[in-house]
Amino acid sequence: MPVVETVTWDQILAWRMGRQFLAPAVAGGPAYVTGRLAGVQAQVASAAKLTIALRQTELCADSDAVEIALDVRTLVKTWAMRGTLHLLPADEAAAYLELSAAHRNWERGSWQRSFGATPADLETIAAAAAEALAGGAVLTREELTAEIVDRTGSAHLAGVLGSGWGTLLKPLAWWRVLCFGPPSGGRVTFTSAAWLPPVPDPAGTVLRAFLGAYGPATPELFDKVWLSRGNTPKAVLRSWFAALEGELAEVEVEGERRVMLAAHLDELLATGPSTAVRLLGPFDAYVLGGGTTAAEIVPPERRKEVSRAGGWISPVVLRGGRVVGVWGKEGVTLWDDVPASAVEAEMSRHERLRLLLGGSGP
Image (cartoon, rainbow, N blue to C red; front, side, top):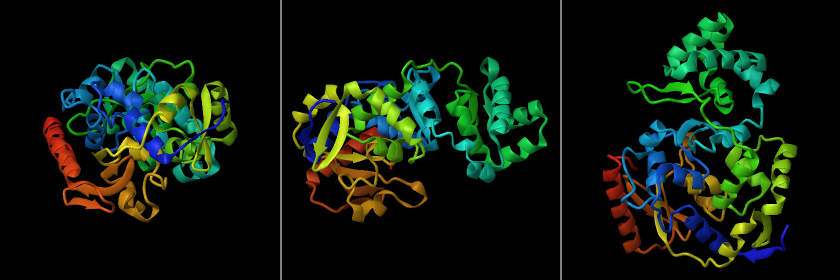
């Protein structure tokens, strides 16, 4: 690994903002932006659309762009990192899904007791679901459940699917058995994910994307904050980083050693602190990728205002890459000095984006 260089958090956060198209925005489509961000969390559809639109020039932001990308299959919507719903670039999605499944939680006795299903049950459910979704079928939750029960003839699986339905289908998403289809009358649908192409180097593909957006990092932070809440076996995690060692550089960040892609080191070293002010929407990738427990991003005494009850991640105000406030329909709450003119400019930009996105936004 190359010789250690010393960098500051001010440099890193400014560099991340640039890498994530926050300063400046990019003239690129949803798949391009999503690829740079290593996926976009999509538990709240409007938040995902805003996350992407904030990084595009306003000429590129479009209310239908994400739906079109899903229709033409440059994007896929599926359960991925941390077991949460994400938009992923379709050509690399298989890599993210493989790493998301690496923890193999369904093999643990505690998981099986909680959800009443064994690994053999999951394999049976997966086989039945693959048959039901073959040939381009699009099924609602209720229709897919009925098909699985009918094909297996198992009253046991009917009960299991009734109680732990979403959790039981997540491994099927990671195994590329299913992904989300277009909504039907406001209801979620599923379709086959067999069309997603394999990726030759899954770990390398994901690590390059992650470090290119949220580096420098450590293997532990990559797994605990972003990938699996710390559930990936340590030996597996170390092997991923070891395989990429020839492409990594080590840096010292205010007394802590982290790794990043060596190809980005000169760019980071040349980056100075930023004064850019940005208003981000809820569940923004910048906050999720860095982590709400990262003191360099979110002041520890303010974390409860950013990461709220029920897993809600607030819309935030950034200055130079640090969270200095939260905002929403009730107004802007700042806990550090920010030029009023910069906040007003961002509020105006959000209003324009809200109109472009058909009303989506905080």
